[in-house]
Image (cartoon, rainbow, N blue to C red):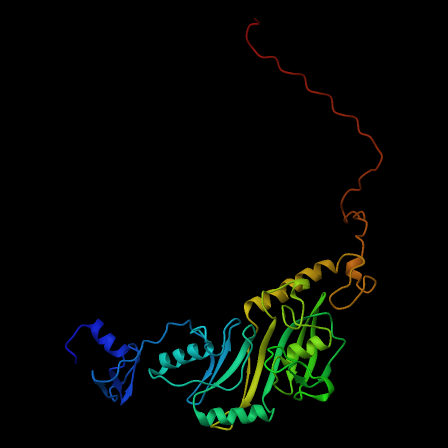
Length: 344
């Protein structure tokens, strides 16, 4: 149609001079059908090329919401320092790649930079308002997995308000004297891993650093937590806070359907759990050690049993019995043959 080279036509798409059904399309590889109307207008304002960012794993996508698996170490929003690689930029690039159209991504809730897991984003103001109402009403299902120091005795409810020690402080804390905002977390031990534990935390509210603050209050800080723990004394580390948003459930803003998503922890989290399982399964077989399930050496027969003495096998039926203690005369040696031929 343009009577030009493929490279120039591609550039016209990238700068926003090509429309599909009246909407600007900036993806040269976007699929079109025979019914679509493709037009070119060089008078349109040139669009700046979107920054190239790595892809993000999309768990669910439709016209109203986007559920992604946030990797650890990734910010939600761009910062003043000019960080362009964020959850918002990756999600926007993914939508543009899928639909060929640029759409604004609205943040509904947040995860800490070092925390991995499920995050829902809104693609319209109506969807954002609906989801925010659910978060304010605490009707959203949110469960985290954490590797913590020590062992929880059992399921417990922590109902302690969370505030800030002073205005503008980044560190949240348990508010003294009944101040702060109400915060409730149900903590359940999942698996004992030697000096550490795998714990599930179910949020009754959604305050800043809620899981980390409440676990630290109980004396079980999250592994790698520089704010509420002491990473220098942790027995093992994954180089970040060992916290993962595993479960997320909410009502779809448009359809009213209840959606529930679960996501396995990332590889570094799973590898640490595997290493702990292997390490403390081996040490539990040594006498005097405590097993990962809490059994002592006296309760674990496999760890203290000695090898049985080897017994003689009885002779099989029909086989001749061997005599024990008898001596047999050795056979006489055969005379050595002399080589033929004259002696030298």
